[in-house]
Length: 134
Image 1 (cartoon, rainbow, N blue to C red):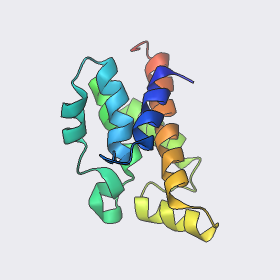
Image 2: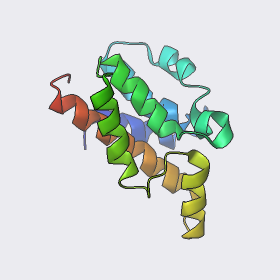
Image 3: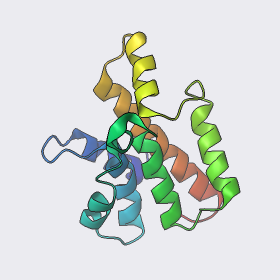
Image 4: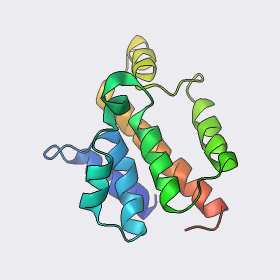
């Protein structure tokens, strides 16, 4: 496991303050980019829980923010990121749909969301390594 993954896992294990899925993806990359983690926490505060309304998964949006930090924001890169995620999740990006599928299969929410966070950290890291950005 990478230091980015390890930092993300550390954040997800903290109960107070709670780090949402977007924060848990963004903060390790922010630290890598030399950005204060508290600033990254505040930036991603409203993106957890699908922008607090069940929309696009916070782990996914946190990953998009992380890609942007390293100027990996061209349409092809963003599309590749989305496609890699979608291919593993029945074509779903929305928090509410992902949680519903998980619930229907008998999964618990916290481990499922943790898994999405770790998956998005790994995807971003993979893409950034492919592009020579980290």
